[in-house]
Length: 167
Image (cartoon, rainbow, N blue to C red; front, top):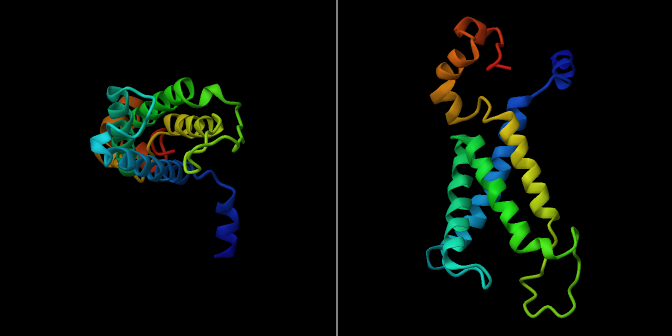
């Protein structure tokens, strides 16, 4: 058993990596989106954004977080979150340094201004999900595996042997 663990330790675990990225991002965005949505349906969580942008961000984060958790259209959900994070950099955090650590003159200590390093890290994680896809532990795999196998030119026999979709 130890020999098998040692042998498999250095193999690629792409589906596990995809699953961990998806679930980590899902927890972050479900929580962020939920906190925004409970504030008047997502309309009053920001002092600087118009109401329509607040609604789009709040519901986008919540829905994309749920989709990532389920592994349903994960690439699309991750792309939507990239758009939200790029918007956050352009409208909020981009005016500060990449890593911004300044606490003097802050009116509300619960709302410290931050740089765009957090947004950059999230964008990078979302792009990894776009590259990896949902993986085998997902609704995408359950619902679309036959369709994707047909598109990629692999059949059920090739799937069992680790064909392109099963990699």
